[in-house]
Length: 157
Image (cartoon, rainbow, N blue to C red; front, side):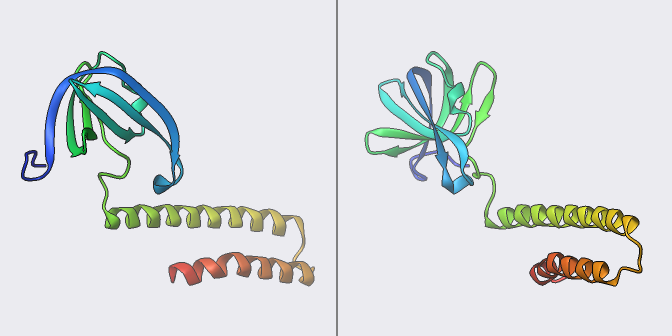
């Protein structure tokens, strides 16, 4: 990442003073708990939203990539000097393609677990009842079709 006046991003260093943070839920990131923070860095107000911004304390020496928003500085990435911890906003490392891949991976995992649960259900149910009970088997087939059908239509298997 280039940092400089031509990109609108700047690298600033200093010691945080009067650090304040508050917990909030951000719908953009799936309702995750995030922390808004504000502090003085030199004579400028520094603010941002990070998942672990509650870890910022007054007296922490930091390096911050910022953009200027009026008189305040908006923190885009923070490195705390004492432990070299890097803080970045949620989702900043992934584009739309990576997000789609992550969602599809999660959907596939849920589908596989659904098959495992369905298999255990079938083994339990057909182990308990004999195959002569046709009405029970018909209901099991209907239940299975109602569970598996939408998965097959959704994922095109």
